[in-house]
Image (cartoon, rainbow, N blue to C red):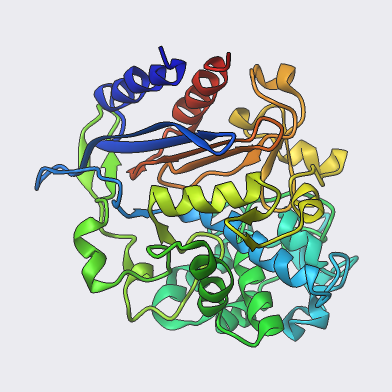
Length: 384
């Protein structure tokens, strides 16, 4: 028996017990497909099943592609990781940081150090997402909400640079819009739009014909419906977040803007697991992939990288990196890396075992800690 087939009852159980309406999972080891299945519905209301060409909003799995693209420019000598970001994006030349005074009042003062390009990769820049947890998040919120309708990548970068940072660059880790600004950096360095660079340098060479920032009319029937999942497991279609994927949208989010298929993303994952190359196309050198998949966080920064489901992991250049299997209770390999998307898409790359796992679903909340960690344990448990 193929022990990877134990994924089938697991994935079906996810759907039966308040999980997604449908899902897909492909596992490759040593260049061979060892598991490839699709379950459930892409559209429950129309009874459209998940298929090999179903399209998914991959959200933050975009980040791994963005960081790969930026590292391609690093390999061409266009910047160094420790260079100040302001040397290339002048709007970030003299950043301010919010600080709390003794009285509790907030003030903005010059940052103790510049944002370095590495800080964008490692989420140590002081940039945040939108929210209500800090003044930086509150001021970021209207910019982030309006970007899909009103801005391109460079305009977004300039608007975000007006917001004082949440902390001095390099001092802490905070998940945020750093990789969106990497998209602006790619535009500045390449002289192309971010989307054009990805298309010409990654998608077309790898044959990723369905991966893009905007959906084409001929693809709409293949786009998986996004579902909101209530506490009782009830699924309700969600179209609130689809503005950024429409043809008229100018904004190309390096942190979460791509749509893709399982097959397309598997090809990208295979290029990385093979040291940056696939079918004669080289994206990165093995040395650069190794740099990407090395933990870059200092002990103080690691204190902030404290999500429960990331126990045992550090953070590299845009990816989680397995560092301590015992701490995470993980039966995997030191050096395994990857990331996930807001709606539940999930990537695992294990260079030592030549293993890749690409999982897709479309549900909010994604239940990633429950779902992804179980997929990983079953995959590694299938090894002979």
